[in-house]
Structures are given as structure tokens and as C-alpha cells.
Length: 282
Ligand SMILES: Nc1nc2c(ncn2[C@@H]2O[C@H](COP(=O)(O)OP(=O)(O)OP(=O)(O)O)[C@@H](O)[C@H]2O)c(=O)[nH]1
Ligand SMILES: [Mg+2]
Image: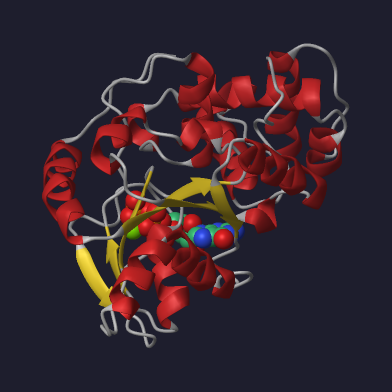
């Protein structure tokens, strides 16, 4: 599945971010805990340059604790600063402030040596729908930014001052121009970082079913009260019939079934399923 969806607002957003990055000390890089690798945007590299980065692996509530631990180990081995969080529940978000202070400690020390009480500024970046605006609201303890369960909700930059005087810059989620690795494209599509309207949702759901059958046998059987078998398309049919998604003539409504399955995954209704692990060679 080659995805070339890079709407105009993302080009504009990247240009604006290139200017605004000059005004910040560091970057908060949001990743989705279900597929942190896939959320790394190679186009952010030249934007970030040498600025300190704090990785926030968000939506940790949708992932098993032992999988979270594997990712923590991985980031630590890579020498990266990382915090896991569930922005929606506010869990662990307070550690982000101390971690951000830590990644900026040299700058803070320089300023305090000069007797300056410096307010840190950080830009929050990430793929669409990873929870950037939700995190900012959680840190601000107020609904300062607009959030939503689809990609492309934030359309322009917004500065938000926190009560501790830190300033955060919310940015629109941006993909890379073309996603060449199929697994990455699929994962971003499963996560809801790419607009469903530009995707083949039936094809996507079939890939997801096949993934579940391989990695999480029993999960689909349990959720949809069906019998699983090796053939993904047969399982697709069984889910559709179990849900009553049948159209005239007894044919299966694949679109409706596909939307139901992806929505169930995205909302965590299938359980805590992860799409990639650090040592995944698949
Ligand atoms: N389960 C869960 N959902 C979350 C979490 N954080 C954010 N969400 C949900 O994810 C969706 C996207 O959140 P946003 O904050 O709008 O994401 P964003 O990164 O700002 O998205 P764009 O502005 O479109 O790039 C919303 O439905 C949030 O409620 C989390 O920690 N756990
Ligand atoms: Mg947003």
C-alpha cells in the first residue's frame, strides 16, 4: 500500500515550523505507543537539527505494560530521553515537565548563572492524531487547543503558556511526503494518522485481520463471537455476518465491516494490541 497523501496544509505547516523552531529551545516529539517506529518522520530530522528532543510515547493506556517496558528499554539503549504518557487520562504527564527541564538543563544553568529566570519554550511535533493537542491541554489543565479523533485537526500553530511559565507550541501533525515502507504506511493507517477517505479501508481491514490472526490469535474470536480460521477473508466474512453487516441479496457489507474493525482497534475495544516492537523483524 503506497500512500501519497500530503495535503497542502501539511506543506504550509512544515514551512511555518521551520520558522518557529528558531524560537524554541527544544522539541517534544509525540509518538503513538502502538507503533513508535512508524511515527518517526524522517522529514523532522532537518527541522530539529541539534535541538534537545524529549520523546513522548503517548496512548500508553492502549498498550500492555510489558510492551511499554520493551520500548522504554529500547529508547534508553538508543540514548534517547523518553517519557511514556496517557495524555487523555493525564497519567504520567507531570513527569514530562521534569523531563523537559532535564533535557534543557545546560541552557537553564547558563541562564541561572547570569541571574536570569528563563521560561523554556518547546515545540510539540508528531504525526497526525498522536495526541499533541491533548497532551498540551493536559499539561495546561485546561482545554486550550482543539482535539479530535481524526488526523488534521490542528491546522495552524498555537502558543500555550503553562502555569509554571513554560511555553509550548502546538503544531499540525505532518506525515512525510511519501511513505515507502509498506508496514509503516499500514501502521499509520491503522492508527488513524492518515485520512480514511484516501485509504482502501477494506484492504486495510483485511491486513489488520491477518495481523491479528498471526500475532493475537483469539482476539477477533473473542470480540466478534466468531470462529477464527487461517484465511483472513473468511474471517472478514464471519465478522460481517456476526455483526449483521449484510446487504441486499445476502452479500457482505465490507465497507461497514472494515470501518467497524478499524474503529474497534483504534478505540482499544479489541484489547491492548501493539503493532510493532523494537525487536520486530517482520
Ligand atoms: N486512548 C488515548 N487516546 C488519546 C490519548 N491522547 C490523545 N488521545 C485521543 O487521540 C485523538 C487525537 O488527539 P489530538 O490531541 O487531537 O491529536 P493531535 O496529535 O493533536 O492531532 P492533529 O492535530 O490532527 O495532528 C483524540 O481523540 C484524543 O482524545 C491517550 O493518551 N490515550
Ligand atoms: Mg492537534
